[in-house]
Image (cartoon, rainbow, N blue to C red; front, side, top):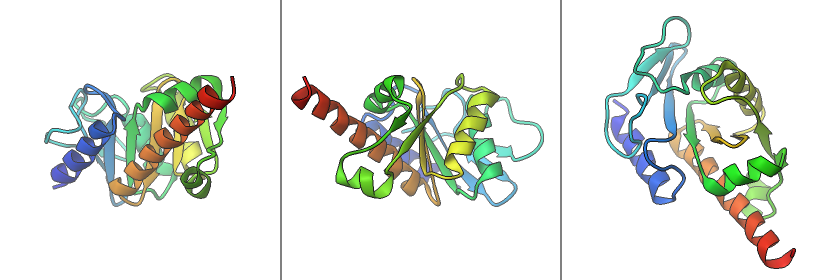
Length: 180
């Protein structure tokens, strides 16, 4: 049902170097029942069977290892889609900053502060931290791990993912070029 949309967004994530290999995951809410997510180990840019994860109850073994994050986000917010990626500049910035404050015009306008949260990948700790962050923002970065962006649609969540990398790249270039 959503396979083509997942593949389209996955291809954009790869094209912008926001994910590599079979890293990252995306999901889309299905009402108050649960959500569809890519299977664990699946490439985001290739059509694959999606896994349905209910908001309550047992989780299929084939669900992405980050299903806990997506589940908590859908339990605690009204977001309709989540994109988790590994943009290199955003990940690097999360290693040295607790909050990223974009200085480029798009970052300032759409996400003036990007919270950095902690927790081991796939853990309940990171699920709780990301869900809390996304309850008041469209974007958070898990320290040393990657971005979690949310929106009404996969397109909106993708835009925030791209924005995070762009804003962090601008900050890195500014520091490299002008703050030596």
